[in-house]
Length: 446
Image 1 (spheres, helix red, strand yellow):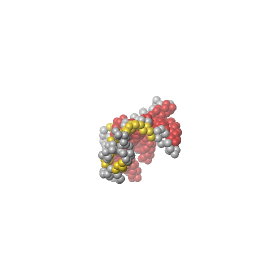
Image 2 (cartoon, helix red, strand yellow):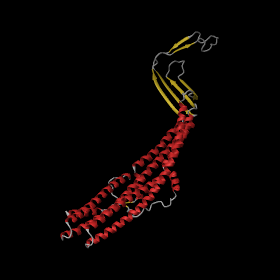
Image 3 (cartoon, one colour):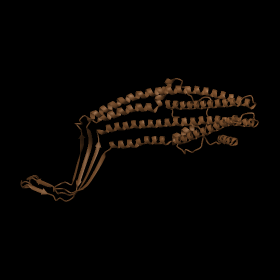
Image 4 (cartoon, helix red, strand yellow):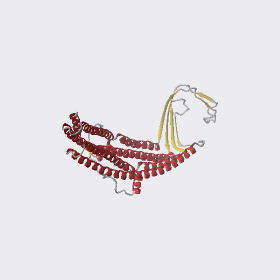
């Protein structure tokens, strides 16, 4: 049992010696921004607006409609040619001399028509639509920025989580070594009947628990690695290591931004949510201008040409007309007024949401800044506590080896160190999370 337990502990320690390619945080962020599928889809959504803009812009050019038809008249074409309808002959007689009723046979006929329309009055409205489309594109670009900022925050948190687990694993493996030494010394004392069997079993239990802790931390780390690989847009089984975490405090804490007001101004300029709220106001104004243009008549230059198969020798086969057409809807029963009123209300809603967004950004920045400073202070305390617990364990272990201390004192010191390590891991995770949230709050993308 003792050999099996020590062998398992040795295997757990050996896993910490395996190394893979080191991945820095900057490399992880860069690769995520280049390969993450959600970010790529957000960029594709933005590129769609070029096609939409070209499609809308083409509406300012002439449009042509061609109609071809083969038809069967349902009744013959009848024409009454009245007396003298064609004038008088040289003798002064009317042409024709009497009323003539002409009738064509009901055979199939062919019809070909062309209608060309050049918009005139709608061109300014189309320009307004292009402006609205530009605003919508900017909104999509801000949404893509939000996707990138969220991705950067997630990558940072996952990376910091792996760093935290690596640090905890390092401490946990040291605990396995210490308990392994305690088990070895206790086994020697047990053979000499200098300690009770229960003391030896107690030492083995603590070694087994320490080994279990290492395995649990390794499982957590592998889960975070798979999630980080997913965020980076690569195979989730890709092996890598991260750089060692700082043991005392976060060097990336923004010491230059001690003024929260300055951080708020930076956030208002960079946060996609704040910029989207302002763009929503511009969008509502553009939609209201388009709604006002709906009251105006539609004016267009138009040409219509018609050609038919022979029907009657007296009827022309080709007809062409050109002119200016005016279309106006005088009675809308309040529909256009209601649409305009709706746009006014949407504009007021956008203004209100913009003010809310500014307030929320200001609150978020101040809150995350305070959390970051508090997390740094907590980590400092946890680091000192861990150092003190480690030194206490070292002293008790040495005293135990020379029979100056009881096994119980060694185990209590080890338990204190494990608690200090757990608190340090928690504080370290809170610090990295606070840093990532602060960077997100001020709108940093890198």
